[in-house]
Image (cartoon, rainbow, N blue to C red; front, side, top):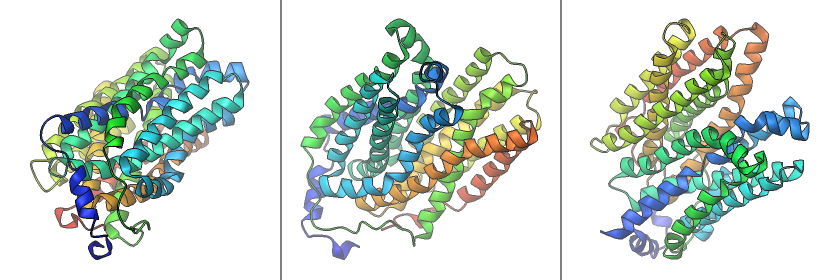
Length: 405
C-alpha cells in the first residue's frame, strides 16, 4: 500500500500531526465534545416513546423502527463514510457529520409530523455513522503514540451522552412543554461541537493522491476485530433494551428498573476512562481486554443463573465489562490499521458488520422471550455470546499490529 501513495502524502500528513502545546489540547476537547453528541439522538428517545406513540398513534413496529433507524444508519452508511472522508478529508467530513446530527435534532422539533420525526432520526443517524468511521483515523493520525488516551477522550463522552440523554429526556419535556422540544434541544451541544471542530477542519488538508477505498474483506485481522465488536455490540444493545423490562417482569417498579439501567451506564464509564489509558503502557492489549470481557461473562452469568441474588452487583460488573470491551476495541482498531486511511476502511467494515448485528440483537431477544414466556433462555444466550467474545479477545495479539493496510 505504501508504494501506491502519492509522494506528497507524507508531507500532508506531517503537516497535520499535532504539535506541542495548545493544538493537541484543542483537538482533545473538540473530540470529547463532539463524541458526547454521538449517542444523544438515540438515547433521548426511549423515555419519551410512550408520549410519541400516543401523540402520533404509532404501532409497536413503527416505534421499533424509529429506535432502530440510527443503528441501521451506523451500519449501512459506514462504507460511504470512509469514501467521503478520503475525498474531503477526515476533519471536514467529521464537521459535516456533526452538522447533520444538529440538523437531525432540529428536525425533530416538527415531530408532530411523522415524516419529519423519521427524517430527523435518519439525518442524525447518518451524521453519527460518518463520525464513527472518521474518528479512529483521526486518532491514528493525530495521536499515534497515545491512542489509548485519545480513544478514552471520545469513548467516555460518548457513553456519558448515552447516560445523560435518557435521564434528562422527561424533565426537559416537562420544562420545555413538549416531547418535540426535548428531542430538539440536543441540537445545542451538537452546534457547540461544530464550533469547536471547525478550526480543526479549516486547518486540515485534503488527502493527496489516490487511495484504495476497498474495505479489507480479505484481512483475517479485520474479520477478527469485526467478530469481537459484533459480539460486544449485540450484548450492549440487548441489555440496553431488555435489562429493565426483565426486572419489571420480576415485580420491580419502572423507576427502580430504570435506575438499574442507569447503573449499567455509569459502570461503563469507569472502565471506558481507565482501561484505554492503561493499555498505552503495553503493546499487548490482551490483559486489559481479557479482564474487561471476563467481567462481561461474570455479570451476564449471574443475571442469567441467579437474577435475584445480586442484581445490582452483577449489573455493575457487566457494565465494567461492556465499557472496557468497547473502548479497548477502538484502541485495537488503531493498532491493526497500518495508516489513517486504513483505519477509516477498517472502521467502515467493522461498523457495517457490528452495528448490523447490534440492530438484530434486541429483536432476537424479544423473539426468544415471546417464544418461551420468560427471560431465562434469552439471558442464557447472551451469556454464551459473552463467552464467544472472550474467546475472540484471546486472539487479538500484538503480532496483528499494522496488519490491515
